[in-house]
Image (cartoon, rainbow, N blue to C red):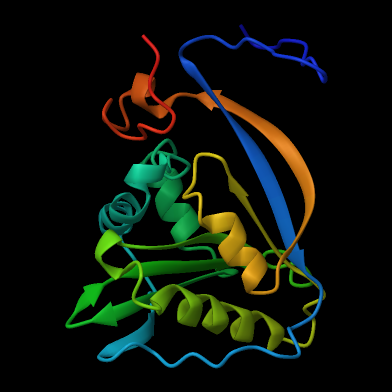
Length: 204
């Protein structure tokens, strides 16, 4: 089944091997005039990840995103992912402690006026440490340091952490659009294990 009609005032069934998300798009049209200054957690530094190998990138991607069914990079294949990671307009940063990467801040500057926060997240053991607010502020600073920036945007969805939407809003992003995304369930594709994402359980 390649297309169905969406009922805008009711329910729309989708096949069991598909998954649906409500996606919220958020934007920031200027750097916040007042932000709470956050210092880096003790022992943590921010490092530019210049040339991640697909294997290393996927390892961190999965550590951060498995619980939330992150699959966008998993379905690309190694060669295509390698090309994405080499893009000159893409900047990837990681908070690092004792040589271990604890999160991901990935910004796509392909449209210089409208950079996108492509991926953002922390490994489970770093959540609740204050690192998230510090990390997003680093990203905001990077973006608005560029004079051509007019808008910084991102999207999050109902597959992601329930804290994500409020987190972005509390850091100056404003919701402006909502969409419905339907995709092949990554667990049916075999790129994620069946037990992952219990908040959106796999259907038989």
